[in-house]
Image 1: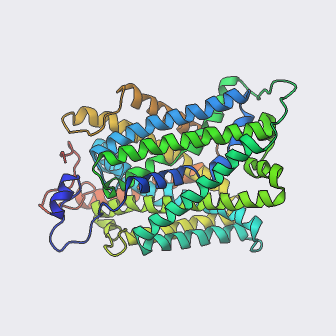
Image 2 (image 1 turned 135 degrees about the horizontal axis):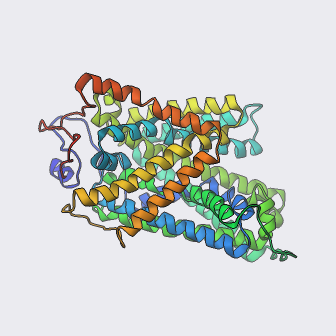
Image 3 (image 1 turned 135 degrees about the vertical axis):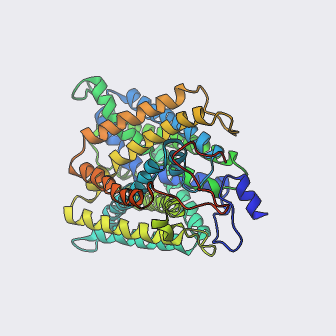
Length: 478
């Protein structure tokens, strides 16, 4: 029975006596909690000031955040078609594999292992460390120590099991949404409205450049919703569950972001938001003094831990898919039935994240270094995932799709254009860290070349029936 269910769901068949595979143990509400937890992290407490600096007025700020939500919703619809048609623990990796070939899919899995989620986990660890150090400093390297501690503790929780990991995520998500809700109430109803500026606020540079730069920060703050694709095979309720999870998540996040920015603008004014490095803390301080600022620092710590925990859970699923397909990485492809999670993948991911925390400690620019390190590689493969949807529509037109992107092909083309612009921006406006991230991605060519040399191509594991899981030619339908 379990073998038949997995074949229906698009997963590999489960041979007798084989290791465990992902089971559908998550509800839609769990998936929504994971997505909202990833997206509503520290960004909404940091980037509004950067957006306000490049806006010409309060209306343009609201339009920028609304446009960011619309673009993210378009991307979520593209992913909803991919994830509902081919539910798989590998997420983007699986779509790239089917559409663009195993070599490019391997490089994506390598990027996930060495750059994208691991760099994000380290980045979030440094944000947590910065705010936790204001509450309880641990010495000269307090931020890095807190960052390392967050990686170790949250990885341990997920190794302990999917149920503990998901309930931790749900509780943290409730805490951060409640805290952000408090900020919204304070800004909209309790703080006196800030006086209107004597003259219109203008930004430096041409208007289109200012809006473009502002959209970089807006879309980075919305980033992370695509991670739901990595648990598509673990959702109850059939393939349309992932569609509901993605769409409801983006509606909720967009509403929260619009309300939060309306609260910031009403309580501090456009100039006040643009001049503040911690808009939420400053807003709370106007009502409750220093204790209010400390309280919101605790909320920000909870927000960061929420994002970090979700990133750890989601990221390990791609490493699991890498191990399932390539014998060189087979230890990563072992699924623990006890934990309901790929324990080896979690442990290796944690070790790499800890090493990146060490890099941030050495450079003394932990957060900035990790932003530069991850951004170009992330947007490059995000663009290719959008291309995969276009390719698979042409290559496999007869596959049953529980959800189809509306206004095709305009919708995915618009998504791809947005990703291409952010790829350009992440290379044009960042420093050495971006080059390091690209260089680390390039090191993936070494194991790829080794697999080519041994077999003529990077051969994947044979399926239980003796056939290859996938090949250079047209991928077989599931």
